[in-house]
Image 1 (tube, rainbow over the protein chains, first blue to last red):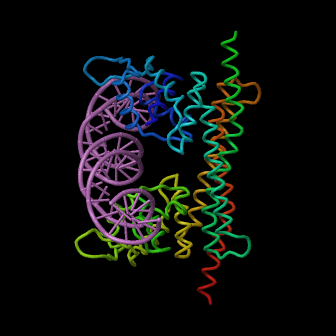
Image 2 (cartoon, chains in turn orange, cyan, brown, red):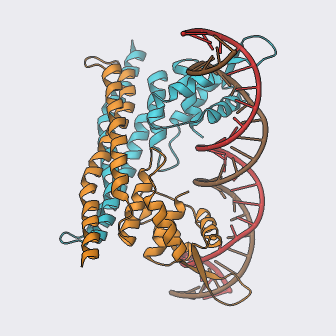
Image 3 (cartoon, rainbow over the protein chains, first blue to last red):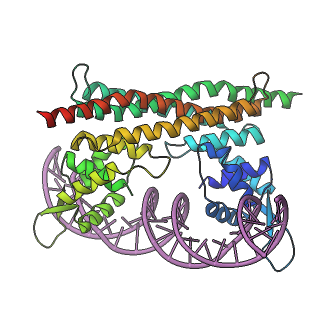
Length: 187
Length: 187
DNA sequence: GTTACCATGTAACGTGTTACATGATTCC
DNA sequence: GGAATCATGTAACACGTTACATGGTAAC
């Protein structure tokens, strides 16, 4: 259900209409997450009902109105709460990216801890894949079908390696963010 | 709807019960695709209705029966048809992996062409991301929030690079598979 | 006998997708 | 006035998830 948090983050960066969100989604969070306009309108209505956002309606009475949504304090609270909450699913990679963007707007929320947790999980996963590789695909002559099966496993190994390499480059940035924030508090 | 094709491939490798598929899914196609037992039972019933698979029921009358599914010729035809069909969605990466496993069982289905098509798409996507990086994150001093946003984009860039690198290593294997098959026909 | 695992299923719900429909504004 | 784009919505459906329920078999 964290499409809501993606939208909150996006709205904090800049209040927008649903249509505007759908367009901007393409070129930020949309790098890794696509949402149709239906989903966006549906979630905006839900969040408005929950008091996380409001729609400032402009335009004449009668016809359909253009609604510019902005985040209310309750929405910020929710985003902070969610940011601090450790991911339940082992595949919190997408969520983590939203937490990064949310931290860029709101300051530290706990993304560093989340990143460290995910790194442990993905290191374990990588190790598992490597064991399977050692067991099922010993060096030497492989038939073509075996090579194909090996490429499938290789995809898993490479994804994990690539993610971990990204994570190791990301960690210092999150630590700089923490240092920054504590520096702000001190001054 | 290609969970059906994943199941067909898995059943071709070895006829199984729904439960068995769910377990084996964890250690092959499950590298990149998880399916709950509900999904699996649902799809098995649908495929049985379509005549793609049959359940050999054993066990006594009355109680629930253990059903061992195996693929019928119509199921093989469907898998071949699907294998040759170019992916509609730009994100055919998961499907491609199933096509690789399907090729390992059935011989060439067209995965090489599919791989080449996807490579073109992903090269274009990578280029787009790099343009955005050049435009939005020029070299030099970046604030911490900017660095965080940059890490999100970096994830997109790295995913594409990693996938393309996998694809470049996979291509020769698919070509060896084609050569193998034409060799078989000649002999 | 009771625990663990094998095996299948129903029901309900939430999310994501597709098709279709409507109207406002802007530009030519 | 017509086309393109901005903007919002309803309805239906497919897919995925969770909760709950049932019963068989093997091991202790």
